[in-house]
Amino acid sequence: MATQVELSPEYTNTQPDEVLERIAAVRQRLGDRLVILGHHYQCDDVVRFADFTGDSFKLARLATERPKAEFIVFCGVHFMAESADILTPDSQKIILPDLGAGCSMADMATMGQTEEAWNVLTEIHGPESYLPITYMNSSAAIKAFVGKNGGVVCTSSNATTVYDWALKQDKRIIFLPDQHLGRNVGFEMGIPLEDMILWDPFKIAADNLATGVSDARVVLWKGHCSVHERFLVEHIDQLRKEQPDVQIISHPECTFDVIQKSDFSGSTEKIIKTIEASKPGSKWAVGTEINLVHRLAQQNPDKEITSLSGISCLCATMYRIDPPHLLWALENLEAGNIVNQISVDPETSQWAKIALDRMLSLA
Ligand code: 13P
Ligand code: SF4
Image (cartoon, rainbow, N blue to C red; front, side):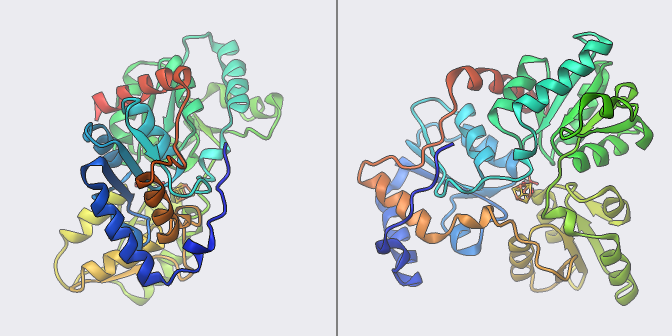
């Protein structure tokens, strides 16, 4: 993967207000040639320039619905920009303002590890015995692998629909790479915990098989989000003791125990809609990334909204998209220099699109 170039002092030494003014000006000059998409975890000074905001599912759909834009500047993380590239025609350029904006969870399933697990498990039960599901938070290569093997992508907003479809295929499921989303949604769909067993990519096959993973209805990949794993049951217990009327809503990347103790769970978009629709005066503790929690608190002044955790749960890679990088990307585009284009090779793209289109047709 290409690495991010260091920005020149023209961008790093400019006063924050001037950076914002220049972004607004260049954005206006680029007009309809440009669409800026912003994930809900982006900071306020980036979100203010987004033409559309959303969770990863909504943003993927929005990318497909803007065929006239020459440039889609994706203020989010790498796997989201890759998915937008796969779903849009070659004539549209997808730009990620900082190439360092990755996702540690997506990096937890590599192709080599995935193929090894697949080969070991299908060797036991036969090549048609498993259906792979990958969370959107995975590389294009993993999505392509899933597409090639009859599987599908899911996001946190459509995982139950996708799971339901997969369970009807009457196959065992391999869920990549987030064990928590896979377990939380699997349990919601009626699969007992003991029928969902972890595959640890850092263990040898024999050690994995010793856990009984090949008998499981669902094989859960041992990946996680380090931001969401920081929300703990102890936080919920403490909050409920201090404020018995608080309602807790958490992202399904949180652990099973946290989700079981929360009142609601859902994608970033669902979290926003649930809180917006709640009664004035209601109290909420939110188990998700801090930029979104702060924005929710600002936009709902009639409600009390805090983070579920006392420690600030920030997604450091999302945070790499900052106003100086956005300005640098936009001014370069205007000058005819296409910087930080995210481009998936045609072979990978073709197979990954099958898995993404399957998701879009279900949800
Ligand atoms: P959403 O699809 O709910 O926005 O989640 C994406 C993500 O990366 C959460 O960590
Ligand atoms: Fe990845 Fe977690 Fe950041 Fe979401 S919050 S982009 S899963 S590291």
